Structure formats: structure tokens, C-alpha cells
Image 1 (cartoon, helix red, strand yellow):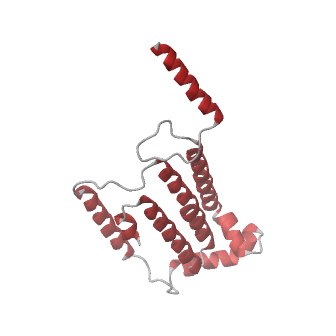
Image 2 (cartoon, one colour):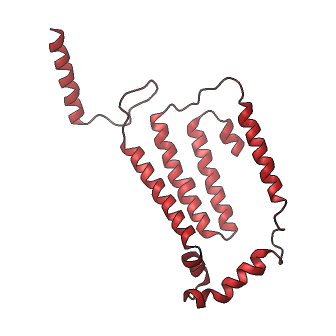
Image 3 (tube, helix red, strand yellow):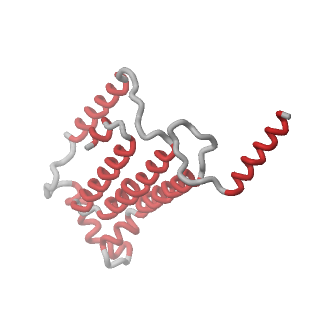
Length: 191
């Protein structure tokens, strides 16, 4: 699906494919019992990002213009980065093994000490609200910042018309009066 997003020239279709990819990622996080990450991915990745892409598409052309040639530097950077990430995964412990650090050190600490440290009987709430509070606060700031950015982009109207852009709503009454006034002053200057 990621290859289709990169290869398609219709920007609306690419935005919708990106939203579907984000929803599938959120579903994967749900299956992996990472509810907070799934909720953030669904809200930011599929929700706010899609609205942001659609808002930008309202101001831009729908189809991407093909560029000539290939960017070999970018392709080299992508392959090197991918190789380094794959090499880094070789050092990870096997998934689901009982002797992994998460099962040996972190999990038992939360199980034994969450109530005495936090005073919250629900261990999941104690981990999310106390142990990982900075991370949860960071996720909340990401959602807030994305919402403010979408609101700011949607509230600004383009100053001039460009070829291929269709206005989405008719002009307001005060704009019509300004245009008439500009036309009458232009006629007076010509006389």
C-alpha cells in the first residue's frame, strides 16, 4: 500500500490511501493491545492528517506534475537508512520470549509496585497516567497542535486565484462591495 501511495499521481487518491493505511495501522495496534497508540494513530493519522491533506488539496491542483529524472541522492539515503534499520533489528530479542527484558524486569516491577507507588488499583491506568505521563502528555500536545494547524489552515483563504483552483464558496457581500468599489475607482481613473 505504501508503494501505491508513492506511485499514484492523483493527490486525492494518495490522501485517501494514506488514511486507509493509518486506519490499518490503528487496527494493528489494537490487535497488539496498544490501545493508547491505536487511538492516537486513528485520531492523528487517519483523522486530523486526512482533514489537513484535504484542506491543502482544496488550495492546490489535484494531480501531481511528473518530474524529469530520478533523484539518486534521495534513493541512496533511503536505501542506507533502510539497511541500518534492518541491521538494528538483528539485535532485538525474539518476540514473545519469556526472558525478554520487558517480561523479566519492567512487567514485574509494574505489577508489584503500581498500587504502592501510585495508589491506583487499575494497573493500566497507573502506567498510563503516572509512569508514562510525560508520553501521554506529549501525545495530547501532538493532537492539540495538529488540531490548531488544521484550524489555522482552514481559516485562511487564498488571496489570488490560480489556474486549476475552483472557489469552494461564493464571495461574501462585503467582498462584492469591495470589488464594485475597485471597478468604479478604476473607471474614474481611466476618464
